[in-house]
Image (cartoon, rainbow, N blue to C red; front, top):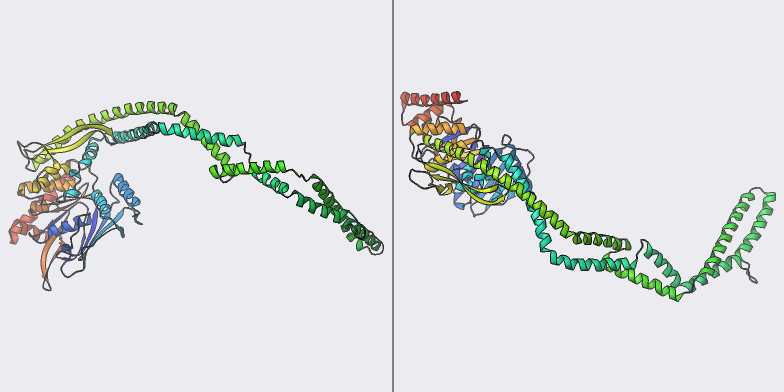
Length: 567
């Protein structure tokens, strides 16, 4: 519900802070006091187009803020609001609470905010449509949005669960049809793709690649390309360790002499026994190195033919890596993936046949659900028409005729019916879409009748009625008051009225008046207590003194009695 409204420098409003109550809120005041300006403020807050002329003379900008408490709203509505907030990154730290704001500057610029963050006007309007139905600005009135009619009828008919089943099956059917369309559309492309995949797979298979092969070939290539150099270094190292020449004994020979000398030292000084053992170990290691160098030197292959083959193999691997992956492993993975895709394409005919069978089965389910949904809707439509016409008779529109128009359509998420509410407001007139019904009090009463009948089906939490009493008298005003109060048991209702009979049913009463201050005119709104409310109702009745107060008291007593009897 709309919990608070804060307005600064809008038209002739200087500063206004209003707290609205749950239930029926009535606003009264003299003609021209500024009641419609409050409606304009709320309209702007809900996404209406801004106009710099709205800014109060002498001010740089107008500011309107609305604080909404959605904690008691239906789970479905809360989910819709939460989804919209999440989509635009507007989540609030206080779940269930929402702040809408609109700033209009004198230079023509307009800024919209949700939970303190700037948004586009379309986001504000989308949230506004979920939160408030404002009669007098048809773009906010859900009953005039034809796409909402099927939703309202389904909730009224109690077939929302069936509707959700329908949506799920239609979603599955559409997914299958998209797959079929893709397969059929890409048949020619698949033929080209098969040729390409077969070529790629065969090229990689023919190479007979092995994981780790490239590293081994690079090592072998290094040896083959540098065979002479490697042999020379191995021979030199072996000679220095093992082969003596005149005047240049080998390292192992010199080490043997050192070992003998240290062994003699150890006979007299035991400390050198450890060093002798270390020299023996060093001698064994150097002997092993010498043998390895000799074997390595003798095994070095001077083979230009093998070198050429290794280089050719490395070039092939390099070519495949350029085309299919950065490593041999990546190339092999590419081949596996290509084989999987080829297998899928080659079996696409079987897959297409399977999908077509699924399509036929799902289409049958959808048609069955659509038929059941249509039957329930048509049965409910007759009851709805009777209920709404009964409400209209109470509101002095006894000649009005209401009907739900069904037009067959291809089954979609909502079923196989295009649903639109139609009305003939006067006897002898033809049925017309609701959006084409004359505006003013007649349309307002129609909306009240629809809202009263669809109260449990309509999830919009706040309903605002302006000029609903236009063209009706006190007796009908009492009926309208009763219906608004009944409606306010499931919604928050704000009503601007000139009828005391209607105003007496308010759960909260606000007086709108125009005052002069510091040489300027401004609109103020104040909540009324019991005493001031009696005075306002007496003025609305056009009476004064004790007689007027007694008449006002009688109106309040009658309203209170009705409320107690129907609670």
